[in-house]
Image (cartoon, rainbow, N blue to C red; front, side, top):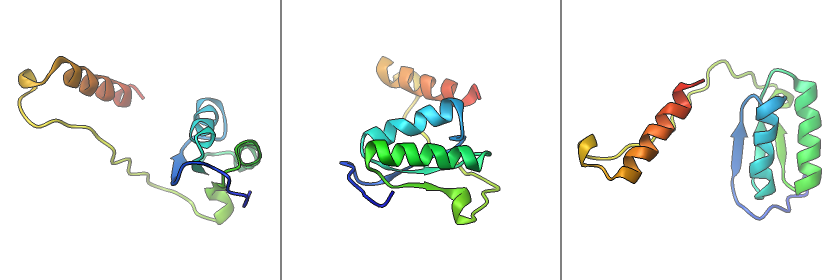
Length: 107
């Protein structure tokens, strides 16, 4: 998977990528040319997914388990915020903020 033919620069980290939704989500950045770093509980499944993504999309795919790295804590420090009082925000900005909060709190 060393043939990097992707069109984007950068990499995407996808957790829970050994099956189900995580495996499907991993395909999205790969189709856009991003290299992909995969983590999950099933290293065999991750290796299979990595091979498929690398071959199909010409991107570099790394499985963290293959590197001997064990992640005990993931700090997902992504966020969204606006300056000012909530009631002063535009409807579009407040809707965006509420959508992000609801999506991240539902899991």
